Image (tube, rainbow, N blue to C red; front, side):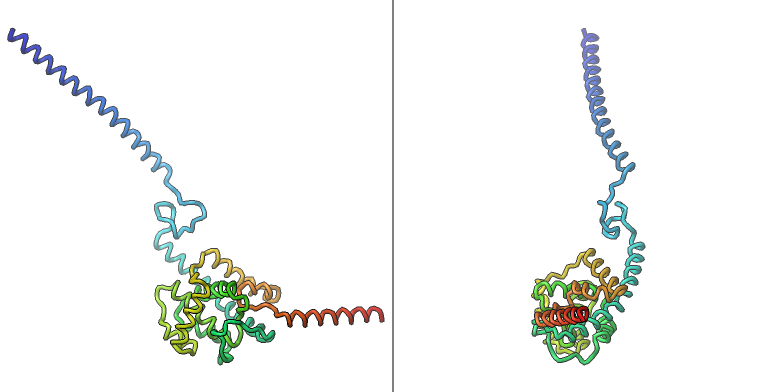
Length: 278
C-alpha cells in the first residue's frame, strides 16, 4: 500500500510536470508568434526604411528619413547665400529705376507718415549703405520687397518715390532682418543708417507692422517667386518694366496720366489719318 501511494504520488507529480511543460510549450508557441511578428516587422523596417513625403526640402527631413547631414546643410546654406548676393545689384538698380520712374510721373503715396523731404542720397547708394551698415543678410532685401508687396495690397497707392524710400525701404529691410537673422542691430543703429530719429523709426516700425497685419512669415515658394521676378527684370528690363509693378514698388497711373496718354494717342491717330488722306 505504501508503494502504491508513493507511485500514485509520483504519477501525480509527473502529471503536474506534464501540465507545466505543456503550458510552457503553449506559452512558448505564443511567444514564438509574437517574436515572429516582431521579427517580421523588424525585417520590414530593415528592408524598407520610412521615407519623407515627396516634395519636402531635404534640410527639413531627419537624416534617418533620407535628409541631409549637418555638414551638407552648412554647405547648402553657404551655397544658397552666395546665390543671393547676385540679387543685390538687381535690387539696387530696380529701386533706383523705380524711384526715378515714379517721380517722373508725379506719383504720391497716401502713407503720409513715411513721406518727407527728398532723400539726400540716391536710391542706389542708399541700398548700398543699408547693406554695408545694416549687417543683415541679402535675403532680407528680397523679403523686404515682399513686405512692401503686402503693404501695397492694404494700401494700393504705395510706391517708392524720392520722398519716402528713405523710410519705407529702411523699415521693410529692418523688419525682415529682425524676423530672419539670428543677430540684428537695435532700432537706434537702424535710425542712424537712415538719418532718422530713434523715436521716429520706432513709430514707423509699428505703423508698418500693423499695416501688414504682422504678416512676416515668408514661404520658400514666395521667396523663390520674388527672386525669379528680380532675375527676369535684370535680363529683360524694358519688357519687364510694367511687370515689376507686381513687386509693389511701382505705382499705378493716375486718371490724369491715363487721360494724357489717351489724348496723345488720339492726336497721333489723327495725324496718321491726315497723313494718309494727304
